[in-house]
Length: 396
Ligand SMILES: *Cc1c(COP(=O)(O)O)cnc(C)c1O
Image 1 (cartoon, rainbow, N blue to C red):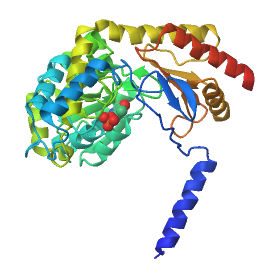
Image 2: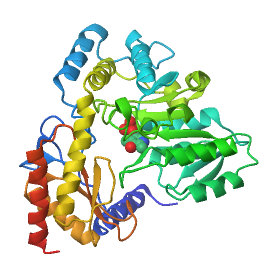
Image 3: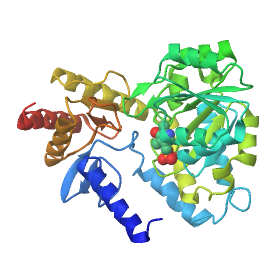
């Protein structure tokens, strides 16, 4: 057995190894609110790396709704939902999400990580099978691990492989296919029509984690099921309040089967054993959903900004992964080039992050740009100019 100092020394070595491998994560502290213009590391920066897709994280109406909720509903709940942690507005937000997504029922969680963490164990057991896309979010991977169901995995968005896995799982009592609606490293959408067709053929349920879509993808911002016109064929949707919907925190599961949500209220452990979403966050999110519904041009603007950035970058000869999503991966030949570009962009006042192995496959290093509805065309142009300039400086 090792001593405590030996254990701590071991941690030091592992941390040093992360650093020398270039994958140690340093945090930059913003001096103010989450928005396009931020200040960090002693610099004024244009922010191109947040999930603030609709620019609602620092929206005045959202903030005012949160402020009045502080007066009316207080600061914290100091309880889980089923004891003393449900206010009328928690129920109102669940109902609002239900109508926003055209489902039948919705349950809030402290985060989408918790929603995915609690979902599978509450609904499935060792007689069942979960078939999961290989690139699904970490919270799905963890949630599946916590469940006794048999596990199958298919290659990212690969319908032929999904069918092979469906056949392999066919002895299971219940089968659920699980996919992200949008894959966050690539900005690619899941092929939901093909997935639903296969699900129908094999009698499987379909679950979509739509965290990078709720609020701005598809008609009315109802997400990838709306975009793919399969809303009435998706059984379970999970999502976050921490991205487009104001970006504070919280998550949810929504379903066209009320019984699924009812069961989660009885069994999902992060719901039963973790605190309620704070009152100000609930009120701010309700305001965000109202703003999205009454201003469809918000979602239109982020899509337009994505199109504009993609067009300018292609014109300048950059290598982009194709698509429509405001996640725009700009590809580079090596992790060194991607890292040098991110640094050169930072020097020019553009805040964006480079991703390399093991977050993305070897040889697929990239800078991930994320557009927001609150970027102006001038700011997007400034970003593109900085890319051109930075490329010259490091001469790739
Ligand atoms: C961001 C994200 C989550 C986590 O959401 P939180 O509410 O921050 O826990 C889960 N799944 C996907 C696909 C995400 O992109």
